[in-house]
Image (tube, rainbow, N blue to C red):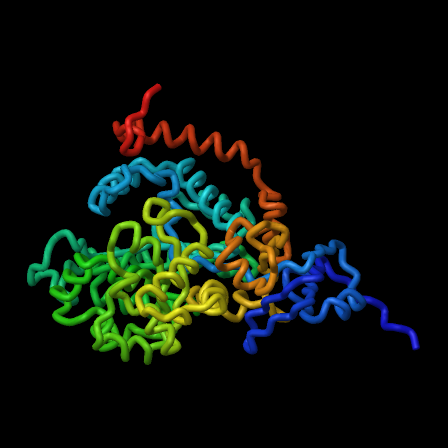
Length: 475
């Protein structure tokens, strides 16, 4: 009996330790993935798929780990050119004025370069999709163009507010009391990038973003939620990063923020909150009941000594089936745009906090970085796992590094030992965008030169010295 004729495919990734993150969390120790027209068309044993498909390109993973692309659920692309713009040891109050001044100087080139560097760095570290925190776009199309040129997926939308938390806690700003004209203006600004979603294949899509952290009235919150519901997207905002904004919210609302959100009908499965370093006991149940998501940024808390990994309830909520994912935040609020590093630090701090070595395992880290991240973005039906019909977004590791040997537990080796160093190939929508650790789409030297020149120009305009650290520098 003759074998059936092999079916055509665009890409076949074979001979892999395939971490699917499907509903059964299967790992195929000698697996393969067939891809066509940007989607996964088959997942199975290597011997079967190698016989069943003739692909335009075949990638032999040589037994290394292949997993779904990581998803960053809270990132500020705009501030990439400010990385380490304050001397080591400065607190967030030292950084905020520089960020504010920088924002007034952002031109189209600055936005384009910041977005391109950010997307390139994320892709290089195994991230295939991100949720932008609400700083973009300022110049229409600049950031989206940069993201598309890198070849990765992104969700963007300008962060909107109608309350300035710095105005204090006067009665005029308590609850939903505010200037109606300011709220009307803010509501009109909601969802400025939702038009991108008319193309279901677009790499860059729109969501509804609020600035959050006490900067939105109830009227604006509910208008944003209604718009997100109407368009089938998420409502994304900051919440409870620092003790200062938590205290301000408590005073303004007269109760804890998550309790208040539940009472006004805001909390739902399509709500994603970033940080949430402070959760009080009365907020746990309403949050769990809502199905909302948290983009946990461990290193953004740790770098500024906020205490989120100590006092926060991310681990406890995750263990009660809350959807917790990871975010890298801003380049000046974290070490690198590397979700694997966030996962690593989350695991270590969870064990240190609880005194339990099983507090957060490698499998938990991968789940939070992939399918949980996809859910936080409202895209769990499209990305986050390697399954038939989903977008072909995946990462191929290398296993020839010293940190990868011996390969007794390949998944732990990747998450704890080799980490981002082992990222070799990154595929988004079936297209290889990173190969052998380098972009297939960018002139890497050109982008680095242009970014460094732009930074010099920006610091001259701000009349600030380039940060030089704390030890004496001698020319």
